[in-house]
Length: 198
Image (cartoon, rainbow, N blue to C red; front, side, top):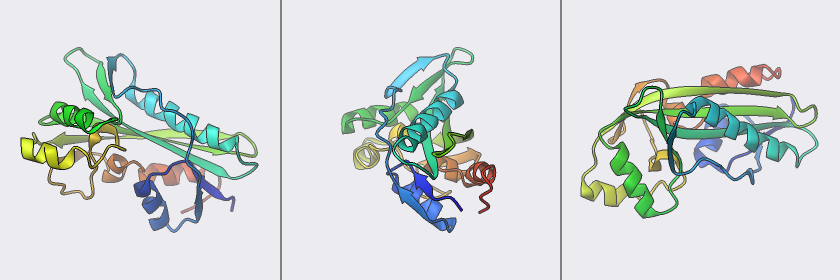
């Protein structure tokens, strides 16, 4: 089996791969994400997630001679009043930005998209896919905002989910693995295209 390289420093993604029984090397991507903390437009959320995942995987694949490089990117998309438009919410840079994002998402139903890309560093062959989950976030009190706003600066939407029955976030549709940032079912399907069965 070809060696697996995870182009991410995310501890949650590493945990999911480990739980699948995979041996892998961690080599975080140096690719700088282009999507701003918050932007509105006709951009298709799944295309953004897939594009960023592929760019991360490609960046790392250029640094190694062989192996399957796994890139992933998660974004939060909040539907707007205008049809087919979304507010794309990325990672906050500061605690204050995190509070603003959490205030914005509180009391809403929104979508979480994770794009996964796998690139064969030797041949350049690539496969890409995405998954979407719909979640509902409760409106946070000032005390809750102060408590959680600095905890997840490394996550899109400024929040992290540990389990299905999270205090703040309820999964309405899709998988919790996707909300965490590494949908197992999709990942296994993409690996299978390279002859790797998990």
